[in-house]
Amino acid sequence: MSAEKSRPPQDRPWESGWAPDTTRAPGTRRLWLAGTLALATVTACVTAITVMDSESGEPRTRAAEPTTLSSSAPGGLISFATPSKGGAEKAGADRAHQSPTPTSSAPKAAPSPEPQKKAPKPPKASPTPSKHPKPPSSQGISIRSVNFPDRHWRVRDGYVRLDQIGSGPEQREDATFQRVAGLSDSACYSFTTADGRYLRHRSFVLVADSNDGSSLFRQDATFCPRVWSRSGTLTLESVNYPGRFLRHRNFQLRLDPLENSHQYYADASFQIVSGLD
Image 1 (cartoon, one colour):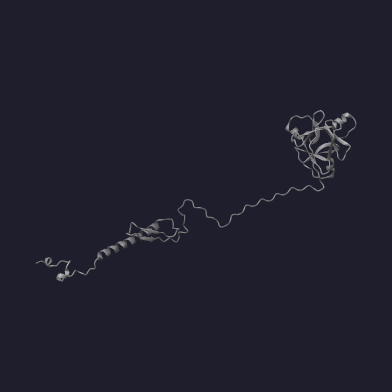
Image 2 (spheres, one colour):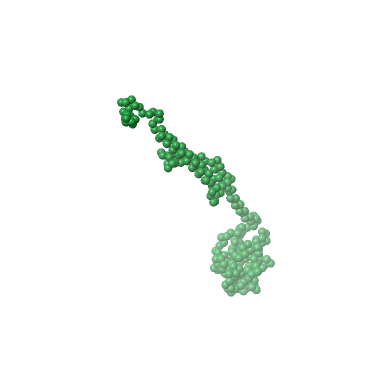
């Protein structure tokens, strides 16, 4: 009888005294396979991380994040990548345009504009003209000198002079004018003669001339009254030459720049009185 036939069934070894072979522990092959698979997985993960770190030119600026290699090991294997030491220095090296590095110095404040210097005040000795003269009158007027009260404006030979007016009707008519709204500025004055001419300055000399309708004529024939501090007196400033006032010099009416002198203020001060004709 062969040995296979005489061997009792393995599921009932106690009936014949036979015992299974115990030289090898059960499941040894499975343990070796599992250990080999785990070692291969760890080796593959380390190799993959090493290759990724060597090929990537951009350092990791963030903290290492866990990487799950679900496709390599059953149950999921977590690996932590270690940032390189020079990552902070090479950050953004692969970008085409790096953002500018902010400086630590604070921006300088824009310099404040220098305060404008105030215009110098006129000397105390000079009177201050008022910009609110009395409204013009539609009746005939005459203009009398302050420092020569017996003399009035009078048109003679086309020029305006400061003359003593006699009792003759012709002289009194030449010394009487109509005060109308300024041709260039209605807030100022223009003066007309009995024959319709206007008083205007030409080469800074006051003359009587016909209106040619030009802008220059309207400006030359317009004067703005400035009332001095002395009661009842005024002076007349040119529209197109601000700072020049009508004054008499050698009894001739002229347009002269303002001077800080008692003589100038006296020569440039006048009173408007009723017409002499």
